[in-house]
Image (cartoon, rainbow, N blue to C red):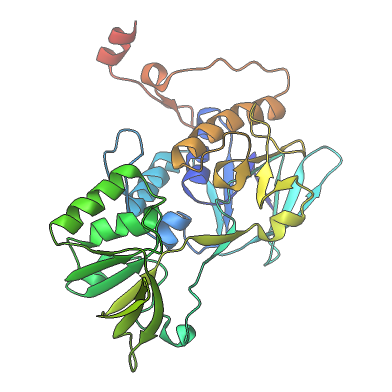
Length: 349
């Protein structure tokens, strides 16, 4: 049986950052994730997608963010159970938990932090004839490697951030980019929309609204799509069709753990992001509360406060004095300390 202080379910950015924050408190972490590698959606779905709202990084690829978080937490020696799904949970008399995966691996911990992002998820798929045949034959729901589309013709459909962001990114990669949305209004960030409009004006993106893709065609691979726009049909030759309609999230087995659920998300107390079951926390996109924003940045904040609460549960009556890493450095488990530069200490004195 694997034993740890904090058992984290979900190896996405929020789960990985929890390792660092817990490490500062001398708490050990172990992470379970159904995917075969760490990173969650950032690694599995869009490793090459640029992210623009991480503090200190005007732009960083999702895969690089994952690598940085793994490097940041490596010093605290977290454990990983990858390729296995957290299936059942048992609460013991002492208040601790045993979580068992679908492969029978047991994990024991006094604290469980659910950082499962959207949970298990599948892309929302368009209702098109022969859709299943064309999947992975030019019909893709995710963009893992943009180089696949180098000098190719690409049709993207959708009105959210992913559709806008990928249209912008592929404008400098693909031979031709067409963006189709069923409305004139988009749901994505205003800045992204303005960039798309600028690229449309310069001829780098072909924007068609309001319109929907009604047919896809080709022999062994997608060769064209048919678009319906205000009663007229347009045929567009293309190498790839990428509908980006978002994900359909499911909590999976976690939904049967007795947690309070609201609209497929776990309700938490914003004091420390604890659920209705003491000792079980939910952080990141998997949780919900008034004013919730599903941003990586918010997940980092929630992880920080959660770790502080976990410390108090694991060390009852022991007072923790908040330290700033700019002054004290980072304490390792071996007792060593990486001191902050003297110039920084002097400046903060």
